[in-house]
Image 1 (cartoon, rainbow, N blue to C red):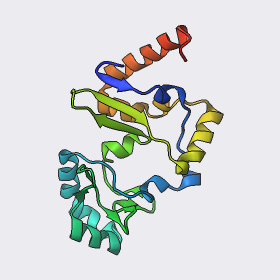
Image 2 (image 1 turned 30 degrees about the horizontal axis):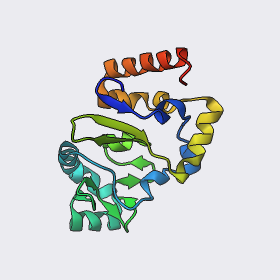
Image 3 (image 1 turned 180 degrees about the vertical axis):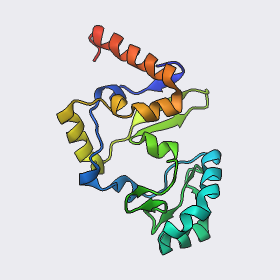
Length: 177
């Protein structure tokens, strides 16, 4: 536990470094639902939509016309609109067309869960399409939490991230990792 966040040990122990040259952003192309988004992020996408519209594919425009900029997934969580049941509507040939990526995209492969107790938990979402990222992270010895430093700071703040680093150092000294 770091602050009031339950941190799964895989975030500390696993190695990871996106290899976009090999995967070509497949995490934005595959899946059965869009990326989780907050109400504020939905509002931001709606504000950007006129600027984005000419850059979206015709199928993405059609999906947004039908579903809106986001829709509730089977669990009732709001997610970004997808095209043909899998591709993110906001994906362009050079990555995300949104000026600010939704936090869930920025954090990926770290996933966040809110518990009814008020606590937040973060876990590592393993997916075969990230196999090259795991290999690159292992080769360069980059822990997932280090690779995702900026998104973790964006979500929890610099002070929290410093506390995470301190926790990791203590765990190393105690031989826990």
